[in-house]
Image (cartoon, rainbow, N blue to C red; front, top):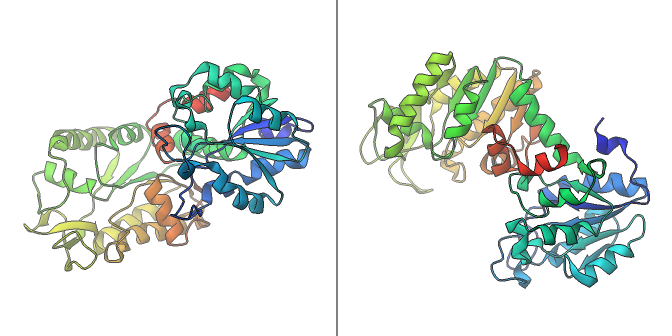
Length: 397
């Protein structure tokens, strides 16, 4: 049981950094409330203890101070429904209005502060701004894994104004960290890492770090073609980072030296153009004709990758196998999701993270069939690259 679960917040004002950076449509309606729902267990625990909750978050990337488009007031109504009680709103995150609202907060009440990023000091990690925020609560709870890789005022710098016993991970953050730790440092072998996405350059560090831990690395998505071309193969008009060819070869050599098996897709679904209505066919990934491009892993690759996944005990999945947003090119990513779900059912521990792979498991209905779905794309990537995340260090240091 975590420190957060053991602690009673009765009579305390808990200042919680949440990640409510949710998508809104033109009418300012929330189109995906996953991040809000993810914070509910932490909020409910404090309220059930008899504490009060002060929520702080960013929304979007406002450039010039307060703008209606990025106001957290658009979240109040839906948040009230999710929590099951009215949520008060402070139209600033610091200053007299916020201080008064926080000071008058009764046990069992919830206050949402206005967008932190209406102040440039938030992203600058300004200590004076952090101290003003800290004065609003008795304890600080970091439950925003999605921003844990940022040394911002509310995610890291604020910790200095609370004693160590008054800093906590929320339940979401605790779940994220313990799941990532289980994969990185307590993984049962065989451990397969499934790495997809468009660019090798985005995934260099994570692949290098995983070479120390994984038994198998599956590489799919656009980045696979850079690895094929590095070996002198024909990839047609497929995506390729020409400047990363030597690096791809180096990674293959490092893997061989460490006894890590790299699995590249032996075949691909290829198309004559990057479009939903493209003409498609199946073709060997290492012999794609000119004028054609690989946009998904092929039939053989799906079977090969499935076999590797089903024999594993630990699975990390970051990045799709193809352009799954288009129906013609989603079979590969869906096949991976099915295999990961089946392996999980057979006893493997599976962690899915990174925006696109999370979107895929949600889209295909497998989010409840894997062990853990991470809410933090960039944060999870940096964690698996072996970096120290400021938002984690702020609580544990």
